[in-house]
Image (cartoon, rainbow, N blue to C red; front, side):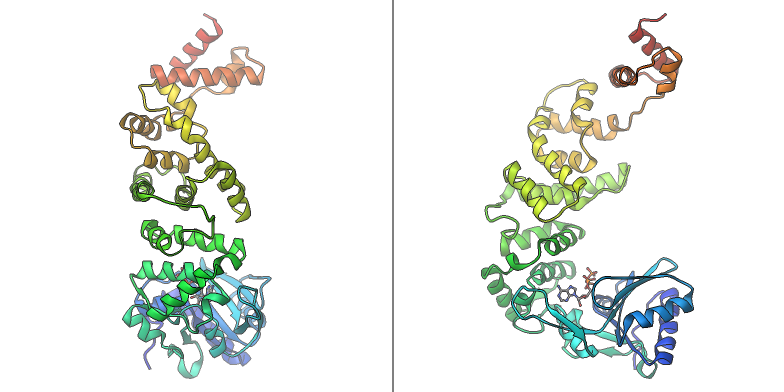
Length: 420
Ligand code: ATP
């Protein structure tokens, strides 16, 4: 039997061997499952592992963690835990079946054998397993034709109710279709359209939709994903009146090159690229609706602020399309996050405006004063609000007059304070 685990890192291989031994001793059956198996068959790199345990996963992880001298985190959801070992993440779950009493409702979950655990999954290509058990270690388990679909490049649901049970799978289908350049199989495609037509995406918990949307917008080159999803569902699940035009799609393409530029040349911090795309999807809606949507889907406060600041900022930033002093540009742009600045750069076509934004991004936003509060204190400035005012004024002087050294800065401070 072919060992499918050969391409894993030596660290992962070692952990799996130990897991296998412990499973043998404790009488558990364990399997690598889901996307990891798909990625191994595709020859893609694997970063995290998902292991299904026939039996009590928590009991199993306790024994494994003790053996490895590691801690593990037990989760709220049914029989699941995560273990970290030398920077490797491994998720364990008790293998289970899910029964949906009503479309879109949360399923009833109970422990079950592997075959049922694989049946509850989204697509055949994600419903395979690799045995980690001594007798058939490394062997592929493929009850539902996942391997054939992987070879044909097909996304196929396991049963006709799949999208109605959990319509989040619509977003997932698009994600895998675009990521692997696969095709959504014909029957699956029509089931998906029916579910969309029935408004099934409206039945899903908004927080789950949010997480899946973030994943979609975090793929490399999300432009294709957005275009494809828009052709299917138009982001109706976010807002029925949402609409995107040619200009918006050109914007998504430009975001891509802006983000590449930022990552290669500037990168002051990690940015949330998906926030820029989401802001682009929402931008034609009224501000009030945008705030309601981002609250409803439970985006984090910081993310909501960035998105609102972009919508609110369009007017003000639009005024940058003229010759301006660096300090004036700084005054307007300094309050915006990098995500917002990149958004504006991709959004506005006017040459002068873009030149000003480039100046801000490449130079002005990095400029820092050498002078600090304690230097002002030595010159007799006590009040902190006055200090703030002077430092701001000094920064603007530095931006416009190009003060280079601390000495030049202090000379300018003395001028401001009218001391000789
Ligand atoms: P990625 O490569 O993006 O991480 P993945 O396939 O590993 O994709 P996960 O979201 O990590 O996706 O989920 C792991 C596995 O859990 C999937 O491969 C699939 O078998 C199953 N799964 C996840 N979400 C769903 C869902 N909504 N419905 C059914 N099965 C799901």
